[in-house]
Amino acid sequence: MVYTTAATLRQGRIFRSFNQDLESVCLAVVTFLSGGILMFFLCFIVTKLLQCYKARLRRKRRKALGHDDEEDFNSALATGQMQFEDSDEAENETDEHKKLTNA
Image 1 (cartoon, rainbow, N blue to C red):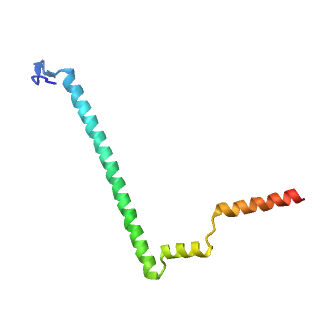
Image 2 (image 1 turned 180 degrees about the vertical axis):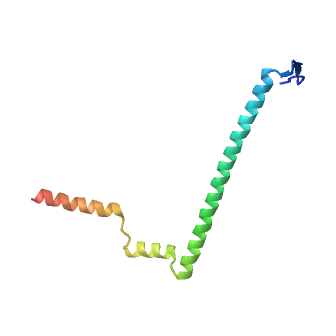
Image 3 (image 1 turned 90 degrees about the vertical axis):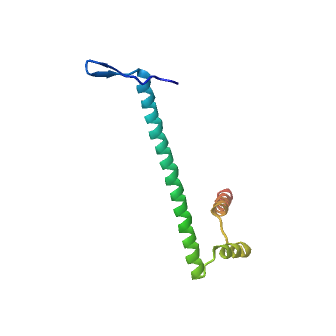
């Protein structure tokens, strides 16, 4: 798009074409929105980095105290000590069903 930039002066007022004004408004809106999107993604990245940093510190602290998550999880699976909420609810429902049908 080629616009003439010559402004005409009439009685102290500068008259420009409407297209130039519309172009500058559109450019300002697009610039503002792109800045907002860029800030959103930068904040998202910084937040994720902070979460990873805190998780790493937590892992180091637990390891220094002698608590290893992977070993605890594997030993709980091997010994059968791991309980899930769904299995407990299913057992309670079958017990209640048996009580109701026997009564």
